[in-house]
Image (tube, rainbow, N blue to C red; front, side, top):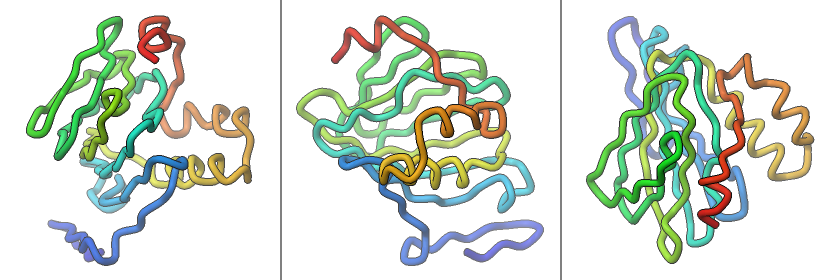
Length: 160
């Protein structure tokens, strides 16, 4: 990664990729520290059957999801929408949301958060949780630090 005061270049060959579960990975592209707090960007590959991200909300950031390939179910408040390659959704701060590949599909997506903040450390913790190195309560205890607040969604639970 090359960062200056006016730009950041991330090369695919050197971007850090984490396994946050047995059926998904996250490629870390730019964090708040790399963009002077403007944005955080990652790419997620969700294989067939991936649980995706559980219902959660961000109190201080908006999240934009762009589907690069495949089909993605996205919960917004109490409604599930199916997005396909080329579709985009903007999710305002405070809105409960979740995402996972549509049953029988895979999904490749880009997630963009504004403003940017420290999120890469959270993604690394997801990998640690997947590997059994930290517990769910330890992960949940970081909700304020990373602005990732898990919520219960009967609509999302019923989707499965």
